[in-house]
Image 1 (cartoon, one colour):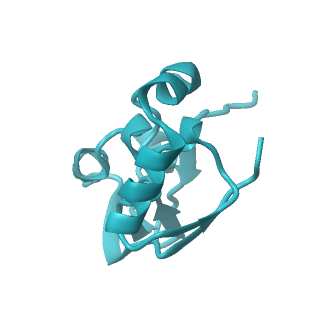
Image 2: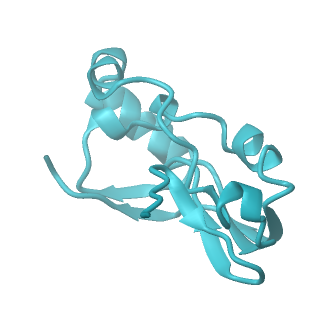
Length: 117
């Protein structure tokens, strides 16, 4: 049998991992707790709150540049479909992981490199 959890990151006991937010929100350095009922895994990130098309329709390039600038983030590549507002709140996602991982650190993005379309 093969078990695949789409949208999950390995979280075996003491295994290091990163759970990222969006381009403007923090990422968390975590260690797994090895919870078997969760298949030794945890969320792999904030996850999308809106579709790529909705994200494209809801943000202009100039608005995204302003948003990134205000957060002190330099973007290399990327498009408005990856705009920070297209993602779930990372703090809510992390709060839901407390039984699966221990937080070791938190860091904020300053340079984001993404693929152009």
